[in-house]
Length: 271
Image (cartoon, rainbow, N blue to C red):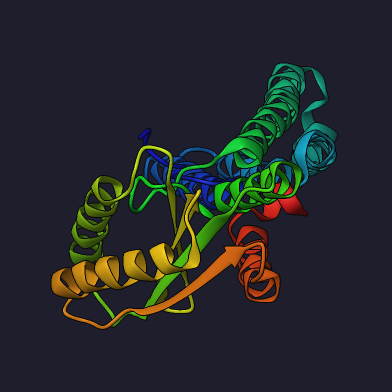
C-alpha cells in the first residue's frame, strides 16, 4: 500500500510559523549586532506581523498587514524626513513598501494554495500513516458499499472490530510496532477483505470488512487474529463482530465511532 498522509494543514502551518519567525528574528538579530540603523532593524521586524497575518488570514491578511507595515516604516522615518526632506528616503520607502506588499500578498496566495492542496488530500486520503493499512474514512465508505450490495443482491458480509487500550510507548517503538502489525494483518486477510486502523483515546482499533462471510466465519476469524495480535503486542484484544443483514444496531455504533474519528483526523475536510 502507499504511504499515508504525513502532514495536515494545521501542522504545516505550525511548522511554517516556527521556521519563519526564527529566520526573521535571526536576521534582525544579526542586523542589530552589526549595528545597522535601528530603524532598518525595526523595519525588518515589521515582516513578522506580515508573516503571521498571511499565514493565518491568507491574501487579505497579508495585504492589510503589509499596508500597516508601510505606514509604520514611514512613521519611523518622519523625524528625519522633517529635517532633511523626503528625497533621501524615497528609495528606501519604495523598496520597503514593495518588499512588504510582495511578501504579504504572495505569501498569502501561497498559503491559500497550500491549504487547498492539503484539504484536497484530506478529501481523498484513504491510508493510515502508522500502519500503511486503510483508515477510518475508507472503512466507512467500504462498509456503506458492502451494505448496499447486501441489500441489492441479498448478499452477506461481516465486520470484525479488534481493540486494545495501548500503554504509552516512545515514538520509535510505536512506529516499529504499528508497521509490524500492519504487515501482519495485511497478510492475514483474503484479497477481497479490507482492514483499517484507527488510533484514538490512547488505544488502537482495527476494523476488518469481510465480504461473503457469515457470522460463524467472522467469529472464527476474530479469535484467530486477536490471538495473533496478542502474541505480538503482549496485550489482550477485545473482539466484536457484526454480520449484515441482522446486526445493523451493533454495526451502526461502530460506524458512528468511525465518523467521529474522521471528523477529528480531517478537520479541514469536514469543517
